[in-house]
Image 1 (tube, rainbow, N blue to C red):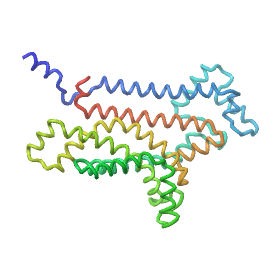
Image 2 (tube, rainbow, N blue to C red):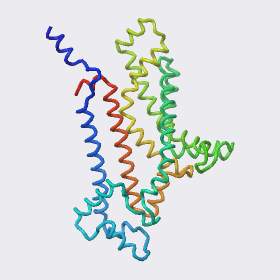
Image 3 (tube, rainbow, N blue to C red):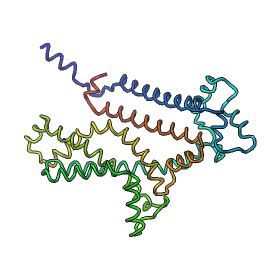
Image 4 (cartoon, rainbow, N blue to C red):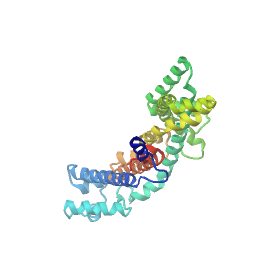
Length: 323
């Protein structure tokens, strides 16, 4: 009787959301963002030299240093500058690019969707390809499994820029099927998406296959098979569904890899986007833009990982029981 009561107490309660866990995850996301902003601010303070000169980069036009001092409050204490910096970020003010002489927020807004389009499409293509590779190799002969594992290892090991240049040489220079550079139409998206999707597919396929193989040994799979369910349905409906749960925890890192890879991919294919902005900002010493890109990347990573953790908590009944 005591054992029965204990089991009942640990059973997940349907319809009850783990609000305490969700709130803790939201708070930890805000703390990570605050830490990223704080590190960015004090890193700027720690750079040797006058901050106005650092922010101006190589620009020397009249009145520039006075404008920087007024915008950043350089005549005030470091603590007051820090609080003002936080206040500007909260209000959406990312500062001014003194190289391009326009607000940083406008620069990012004009380019961000190109990067988001590339990363999202590449992520979807990579995930679909990973599922196909994993499902095709499950339960197959050693030769097939070795071939798939080798292919996945190649996808994850080959440098992104090498793949991009190779695709350009074959499909753009030789066969002229896709444009060499630019972002006009879907044709210009094909080669960058393939370049960015292959490493994602190789990494996720290994994780999905290992998780599916572990799931196929679970007792509930034996029960499903005993009901006469076909092996294809066992794989696609039952094993794959459970195998995708651990993959959700890795998606945050995948998003970070996609954004990092987008910087290289946009440069190779001459596409507009955050990568191009970052490269131009670094080469021209446009520090306000560099800081904004770093904080934007941190924001994307924190938002995506927080949402995935909350979704994972809602989907996994074991975590819902740990309210």
